Image 1 (cartoon, rainbow, N blue to C red):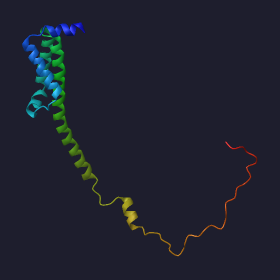
Image 2 (image 1 turned 30 degrees about the vertical axis):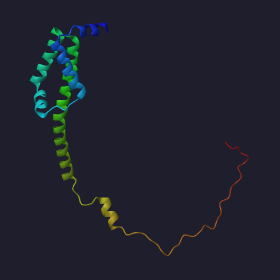
Image 3 (image 1 turned 90 degrees about the vertical axis):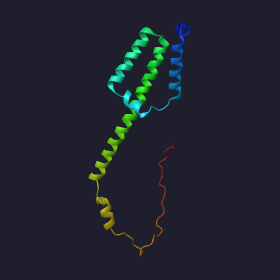
Image 4 (image 1 turned 180 degrees about the vertical axis):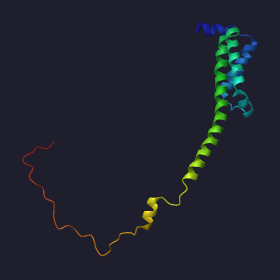
Length: 145
């Protein structure tokens, strides 16, 4: 913990400003614009972000490097999700369209059989009361549980 507080004491104004911006970006959690999302979601930009993180760990304040690493991961996650959700939605819609085109039937076999069946109603018979009464038999001196 002392390392953390000592590293915060040795911050120059430029690093402090960058830390404040990174903290604000992470806490506010704004959505990434589509242009930025497309740019961040490429392999060269991910390599560049990794190089910046490595540079910050080697030549800058460690707290700033960790903060930049967290924000960079959040940025890549948000930009990947926005592009991924678009493609997943398109893919899911395509799968749903194919599924419905293969299953276009007016009725299932069960529906056809039920439609052809006539209802079984016998109005001449009425429900009568039974002529017998239930009786209890001897329990042969068994005990209750």
